[in-house]
Image (cartoon, rainbow, N blue to C red; front, side, top):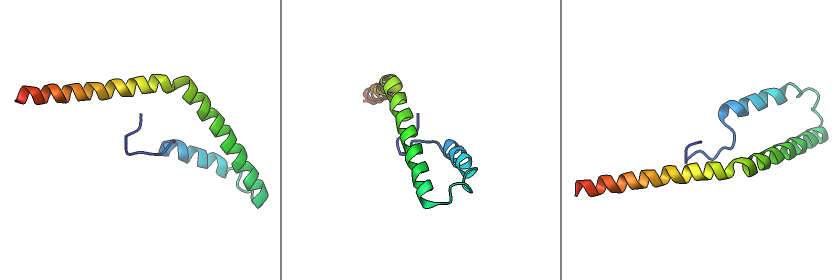
Length: 84
C-alpha cells in the first residue's frame, strides 16, 4: 500500500519502466496525430486494467486498510487510557 500522502497511482519505478518502454517507439510516433492515438490507446488499456484490478482486489485492500486503522485507533486509546 502506498503512503497516505502519495496520490500517484504508479510507483516511480513502474512509471520509469513504462516511460522507458514507450520511449523505444518515440521515433515512430513523431507525428502529432499518431501520438494522440497512442495516448488514447494507452489510456484505454490502462483504465481497463486498473478497473479490472480494482474490481478484483478493492474489497481485500479496503478490509486490510480498515483493519489496520481500527487496530491503530484501539492501540492509541488503550495507551491513552493506561496513562490516565
